[in-house]
Length: 174
Image (cartoon, rainbow, N blue to C red; front, side):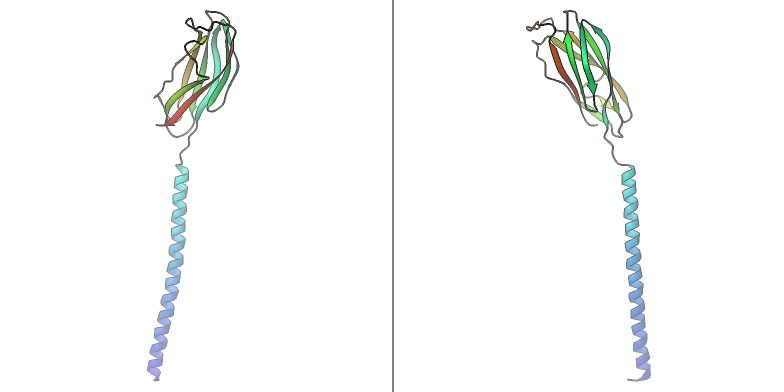
């Protein structure tokens, strides 16, 4: 092999080695850059993550006549209370404050009172302030007033019956 050929072959080998080293650096650099970009996207998603947090903020009796409410409690999604009507003109009102502490608007899907009352029950419950289909925007507070009255059409006329009840408001994303 001649000296020129050997130099040319060595030169080609060094060029190949140099290109391989550059390729390794490029792959490593691209990999690091891709991980950095993916991490930034994860941070953006975390900053804008959805937060679903809606429920009862408070509950209190605002008027009472000829009846009483006891054991009035509430959690995020449910309020519990015992009702008792002592006279035919008995009635009372409970004010519930509902707050959307999340960052998503909520739509009232349904309002449940448990156990379900029939037309023959001694107590009639009506609601005012929040209705099925209402939108409670993120950060917004709304008031629900529940009125409990003696049912004059009831077949069960046993006054002083204690009724354990639960109020549940079901929400869906608006």
